Image (tube, rainbow, N blue to C red; front, side, top):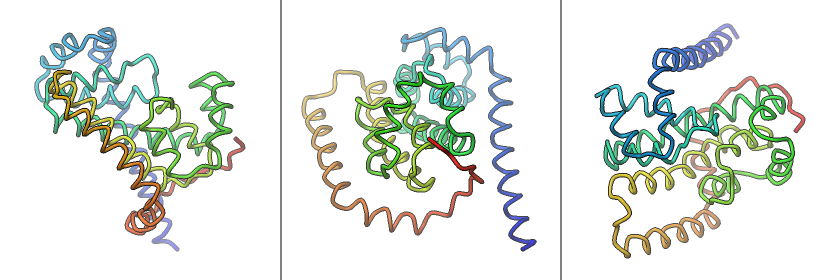
Length: 242
């Protein structure tokens, strides 16, 4: 029992330290972050500004992309495109993927812990009600497509998922796999521009169709296999009344 409690305390302190580190970095680079946010929609301006910071640039980009999950005012796609433009497809997509996945999972866990009052600060009540009714009994498949299809407010869906019945591990699965195509696609626009050949766009459409078919057919088996390998995520959640 003592060992179990000690491990739980260690995990809790680890999560707290991670959040505090993020807040410290945000405070430390607050001026630079606000300067980049002012350059809304200007890829070249964002790129030029990030390049001034050398190796610190990717860290600032990571923080900005994580913050945009919580703050609608930040133009996430503009920064994703800029990341591809500066750092190339591989590193740009890597920064985009991990920053948005980590921030989305944090948004989910915070909502699972603090409930509806937290979400009410993010969006209007009628919008929350609409998506909450659609999502509250949904599983990983629903949230997977919520991150891919443009009809969904994908950042808001992280908070909506926290109000739903989906488990943290299943949400992480949908979060990671659903964010990945977007991270690659938008970063690719930044690294190669819109002058990609027609066959590339045809390939993108085919991949999306195949991905949808694959998920519908094999999602349950894939979830079972993946969730066995994934360690449990303890969020010490309070009960929620969505």
